[in-house]
Amino acid sequence: MGDMICLLLADDHPVVRKGLAACLARRPNLQVVGEADDGSEAVRLARQLLPDIVIMDIEMPGMDGLAAAEQLRRDLPQVKVLFLSAFSKADYALRVVQSGAKGYLLKDCPTDELVQTIEKIHAGEEAFEMLAGALAADQGPGRPAKLNTLSGREREILGLIALGLSDCQIARRLRLEVSEVETHRESLMARLKLRSVAELTRFAASNDLISPFPNDNLVK
Image (cartoon, rainbow, N blue to C red; front, side, top):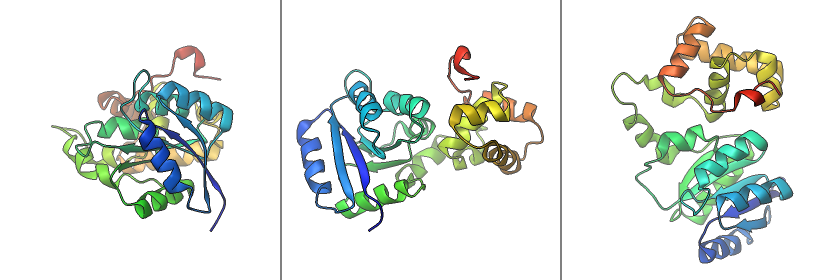
């Protein structure tokens, strides 16, 4: 059965939240620890409850799910986000991945698929199978296909490298070991066929991957 997985549900429709909570409560390794009706509330409760995973809708009033996921990525990188959306067109495909979320499912997915995805994300994997086609289509002229193979963490590290942060500064910001950052950097250069930090920086800039963090927070 594995460890207990603590979940926070964020959706502006109470019926959806209650139905989802009731469904997940039947699983002995899942525990719903809180519910939020918008992104701001999701961020506040995540800080208070420290769930393992936030299951979140994208379109909500006030702060939407994408903005909330980006906030959680910055403030609580250990809290993972799984988007549960009603939109099969995946209009937000790239932003979903860039937000730092770990997965994306449709609300009409089978319960077993949802549970398996929760367990997969909790184990450290990602679940973007639903977005694969949309990500490929979003490449556009001249957009490297390999860009879409990068994980949210790799995109984040690439953006910080492009802003001029050292491996030590990136490690502190993302709460990683310096060796992990070095491994990510070397892997990025090999996969993207780039030979220097300058080339990584140009690649990040040309593909809108420059991290939006304020300058006064970069070296903390």
